Length: 460
Image 1 (cartoon, rainbow, N blue to C red):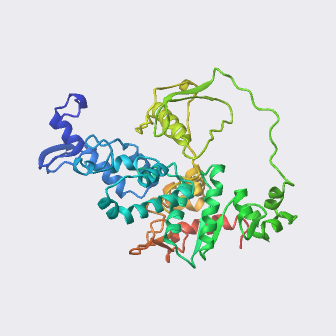
Image 2: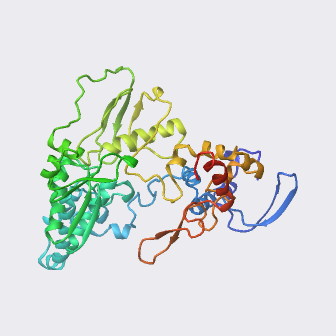
Image 3: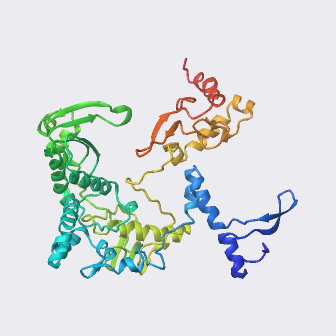
């Protein structure tokens, strides 16, 4: 294959080899950077399997993101995203097959199965099955998730929705004597559904369980039997128990910020004047039909603090994240992610950058990731250490002070500071590296810290 021929002019067979690789050994030659000509006879790895392999093997979050940029999800052309073959989809309960049923909201599925008319024989066969399904669906409705569909991809759920699904599962298990720990289960939940969540928590408590809930929501705090208020500030300014007791006792405590806001002694002031905006500088989303949006058209003013709100499941994330954000990423950064269906978006010429920041999305999976690497602060820090006299004397480059590459990192834990122990049938366990003791670097790299930094800083 001539490297000077544009890809579009290659034959179909040549395109297949480049993209997917060869299915039999081929004779080929290539020239190295030094000018040597090398001849080989073997299988050729295509672009697609190579990217997939590197995506799975890399431990660098940056490279994983880059490889992932070549991938996007599109419905299967054979089953149209239904996942099952024609024989399975031909089986119906009433007028609906299993995929059509799972695409309905949970409350509609429950109503559909409750009103299902069956013959006496089939009704007896399905009685226990339908009872179990309806009970489990009722648990999901009771925690405010009636708007979800059973076909919804788990990766698209918010942190609060995922927690409430697990909560509904635990309610259904009817366990007693268990201590449950929940981290802000009200995230993503509209205020109108708060009572459903609180009722579910109280139901689990009444079964004989203990619930510890980390929460900022006012209604949840007031509904609690016992409150522990930690503060008074964040980070080095916190870490103390300020008050504990019933919600009424917290409200009366003079040093508790939580109590002052609960009692109304402090409040967030409502702005008397709102910022005016130029009506000619807006982004207009037209004809959005993704997920449950029904031909929505919305104008978003620029240069403002614009809040998109509404009940859970109303389509907020679909409109802003799945439609607007992904369309902007394709326009500005040539992203391969396809936005949700829409007719057009006007006003994109007013935008030159877009940044997504979702609190419920974890920054990264590898334990070596930290705020320094994400904010870019780690690059000048490494440069600073590289410029130190002893680092120069040893010939250390910036990579020496990176825990992502070989050289200066601890190879026992590969710069993680932790060793992952795989537990069969249980979640993986991370323990501190017994070589670097969690410091991530080897002894030679850490010597630059002791001799050049600690002395100048006045440490003994």
